[in-house]
Length: 227
Length: 316
Picture 1 (cartoon, rainbow over the protein chains, first blue to last red):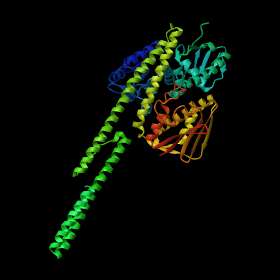
Picture 2: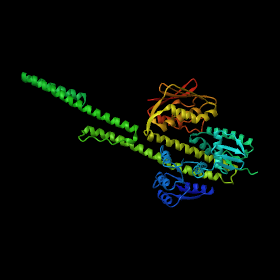
Picture 3: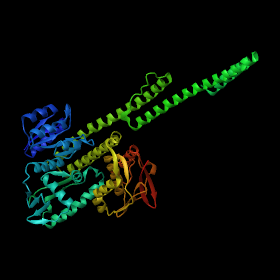
Picture 4: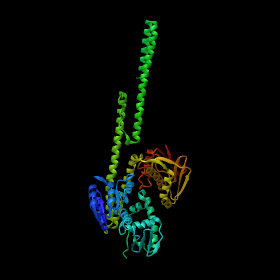
């Protein structure tokens, strides 16, 4: 997949493209409004990550142009500009998602995957990973053909883990993904731990609990066990 | 002109009239009447002048209050074409005050905007780098522990930043899109969002709704206000406690069981007035509520009775 990263902060831009390259994507960068405009008129991309606060213009103004000439391109706005109506405006102008800085890479990753799935692979209905089979439309998970009985939150956790498979995801990013950013105290982690405990029990019943690794209080990793 | 000068002028005129009266009798009556008329005229002119000054004062006072209420909309006072000296002096005076207030407001606003934006990007970079560092296969247990400390503190930093930005934004946004917000709807939606959280803590929620309550305010701020009150009622509740939401007598009450306050109730709405028991809490939730109410014509009160903490919202 080919990405265009429109971001004026060099460190962040490098980090995002480093991350995307590791996921086997091709990335190109634009640091100004003009540069983005030039690239967009000459090339086409599968997905654009768009910062709104550019030194020479507002990224929102690029949206009509993207929508006109690149209908298939997915656009995710990534911006610190979280004023009350920018979000609505961006989505109205045809952006597919909106991510507010500061964000977690795992969250960006999950959003990219969700958007791409919606945009490009609408026929993709299930995903396999080891013993797991995810049925996205029905929001259910099978393990070796057995239906796993999950609550809504447990499915969300598992899906987020699946979208970030083989990567360490932090507990903050998981809590934020599930409840938004209003979870603001230690208490939210108790809440998360409770859900994970139940989920782990259900996985253990199917003998697949070792897919879900806990890493010293930092976070979790969803991967196929070595043995 | 002071009262004493007025009396002096009166005495002077009376004396003058009386002196004349000794000269000729017929003329004296007329001169006396003329004196009285002069006196009345002087008084009338003085009264008029005081009234205009008072009127100007009132106008500018109102302008200053308007400035304080809505700092974006201050316009330099301009006296009319044929402004009297008094009027232009008053206009100057209030103009100076208004400009000063507006200037300091703009400086503060710009500072918070810049600070929040400039801070958000480095915070994102730190978070992103840490998450990328976490993917390294060579990390030891100690490394994970260190990373966790950096991460959780960065998150705290980021939350403080966001909350402070919100506090500064309230002032700039409270006036946008003011509508009649149905508080019943906001409350019920909010309760739905937190349903799971209450369930997890075993909290029993009771609603006593006797009427529909509307506040004239910005919808987003109304949602933030109610959600902060409800989170507080959950956060500081006892396990298996109660929350009661009552809407009646044009008031919304949210009361909850909980430990007694460790701090002075007057400090409850102060920034960073956090509870000792909960070091992770930022202590900004209720100050955000307070600020929203102040800018939206609402009053928030705290009561403590029969072991229940109660927060009440009503129209000013």
